[in-house]
Image (cartoon, rainbow, N blue to C red; front, side):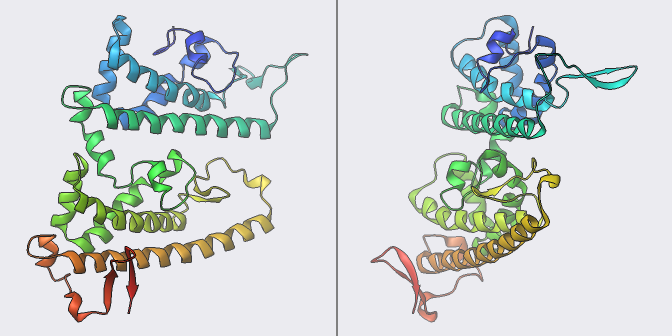
Length: 331
């Protein structure tokens, strides 16, 4: 029996490609995929509830819907985790591979292409899993997740989906967003806090766990642009991500033996140009964020900023808002 799926026929329903594998081969990596990709989203408590219901054969309704979301993540990612060992036998003679007249090991480029496909497919469903919980969970539905540290952490990331991140800067899916999450949080807790006050930052985090007001949403639009460019720049400098034709991406499946010196130099130059652009955009939006606050803060709106040393009376500066266009200009 395959954990969460019962049998191989059910498992295959959640795979992006046809597979010919045994329960043992597939089942060995279910827990790896669950712990690596599902628990950080669902949380251990909510997962244990779903698993117990499935094990008891009583799963139904919302829990069954959540199980199916989990299955869609786990199937391709479990197969990805085990792909390096498929077809490999370990014995007294060390590691060997099985070959027959009708079957040969796949070429290296074919394996790499498959790995990328499995990861992309799996992370699409990881994001769908998060969005489902975000939209569905309440005090009475998936209450364990609703009150979990995982929900607090994920919703506290001001850019918590790749779809939203792509409104500001192109990235290659949820996997890239996840690779940048620590840098996004670092930008929030340093750059953003230092420019809006700790009080307003705390108010925004609390609002994101519920329903932000229209005024808060306006401020968040400026903040999110700063986070996107700052986090991308920081992640590129740390080599946590790189660039490809889709924008910022995770570089976990690039084989250096397939990359020429010329390719590397071209990519290095491209990243250097992109870093300068991201830094410039981040600085621009940070200035516009401060201009917005300086223009709108008062004794009743953004009070903590208005009372802080950060506030600058707009009458004493040349920066102001052009309300006729909804944008900013410097006069």
